[in-house]
Length: 225
Image (cartoon, rainbow, N blue to C red; front, top):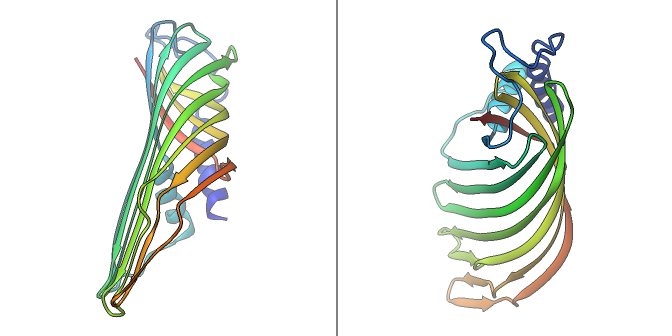
């Protein structure tokens, strides 16, 4: 329900000035990207999640628990024409949580290169394309009360994905966008290590293949210049 609320708020913002399809501002500025333009897009999910919680009157109850979560997705584009662009992307996620005796940390990094094609002659633009990806991830947890520790090691993955999205230009060269993607990947994980007291057990290394569809739409703020 929260995800639906977040998306509803996002598309509410995208409908601002929906009745106006002028492609030039009153100052003569073009709303849409042009050949030679650059664009940088930021993941706006956190902002809409905050607004969604505000509308739902959601709150978090504090306690003897500390958590930090750094997540940022960035997409940099170079427009080779008004309807095509090359793009570089990076998704970074670092999570740390800790209470009196237990701690956990996770790292997930994804970077890629891609090509984008665009459709539409109004301020609402559709786009599609593909990215080549590299992924890094690790997991570590420790419980001092039970003398337990787990280390996953650094997993490395390679893959590609197709994407489909749309963005609405609310101001000249400033847009809100929503994107869905589907990926295929192969990943390799080293031996994990689990310690219980004085006993340490190594897990097996692993290579996996799979498909990964994004279940929620990624919301972006895009700045063109």
